[in-house]
Length: 75
Image 1: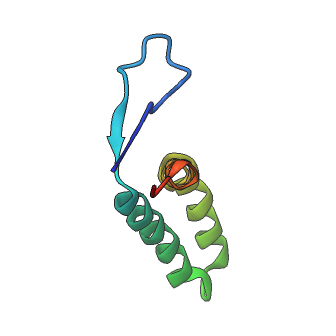
Image 2 (image 1 turned 120 degrees about the vertical axis):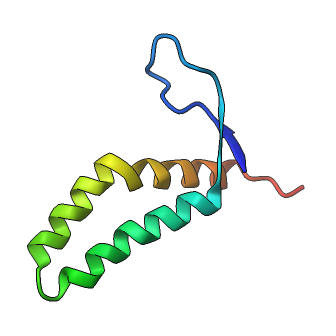
């Protein structure tokens, strides 16, 4: 688990919220896997879905996961 501000560009943010690295990785994997399953027969559909879901869903999960891993200090 980690803390983050979800949208730093909102004039009146709700404050920090918690995130889950496990959830971030699972959601990213699920969205990418879905595209990989149809890539062999329908590559254009796979690419379209990756791009759409990157903007709508898994892109934010990847950014959150990278930020959490970047600041992780096991000490």
